[in-house]
Length: 251
Image (cartoon, rainbow, N blue to C red):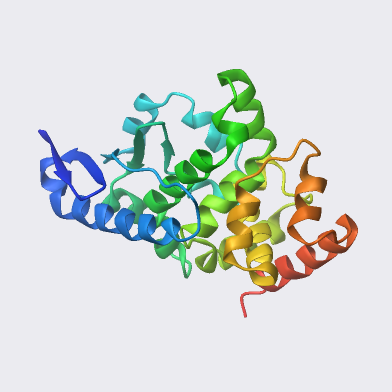
């Protein structure tokens, strides 16, 4: 099937010719996400190309490290790792493939449909984070792994995935050990957003955006102390675990 391109004011999509309507939907979702993030972050990212893949195998060809990302993600969240963000391109499964990958539980289709906006939000967060912008490749990778709970969590929260994640959170709490605080690498995709959700609820969206844009040298404790006006780490952990239990209650 021949590939073609579609355009919107800020983005370009590359896709198979029969996916033109789906590409327009993805571009529209990216434009709306960019408009929202422009009110929260000093800089956004434009002139990006989103590449729509019909099969997971095609994603792996574009990024052979993707299977390692699947393996490193907790089973409850693995199906929601459906793409990756580069400096000038976003690679993601096409909408029909995303829909096929979703589970039958409530919210799964809605959550997975927001994959492209989440990848774009991840790109915007990197653009606004001076620690990442100024880091060389090996250092940047170490930072991204160390701070995965913040970077991935913020991307998914700002894309709107968290409100649909309660069944997946409930499965994670039911099937696995008690998560660490802040969430470890395996839980970053799913539970990292719950930390951002707590910041936004208590301090507001702008505070959550500032929180996502800094990687303090003091580590997670320093970041969380700053986010909650100097509140103790133990107090914040207790508040987060109560918040996580509420999100996973499915009520």
